[in-house]
Image (cartoon, rainbow, N blue to C red; front, top):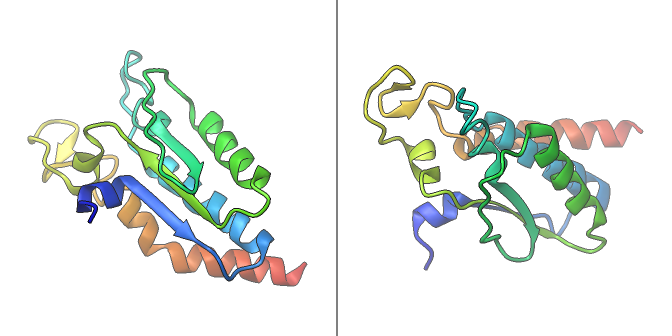
Length: 149
């Protein structure tokens, strides 16, 4: 059985019973929300390293890690391209394999100017957990929008 840390690192969505357009838009929105919620260091050297280490894959979680600073729009574009190019895929993974991903999600930092209560000030409720709490709202908004078309 996978550890809780690996479960949170590997955010999986299974949309086997939804229309193609509804699930694709929802996957893109949900994964994009996780990436946007990810804290970003203000240092030019580390910039968006955590945010830029989110990788979307089909079927199995990514093992990839990059030292490149990948901007938000690049990560979101890659999510959108992967989801839209996967004709029959129903399971997508959003994975961040950096060793401190668990600390960002569940806390554990020492108190300092950029932390509060063990959490990053930029993500005091984590990034996956806060998105998961908004999942129903995001899904319902997208489903309603598509039903009006």
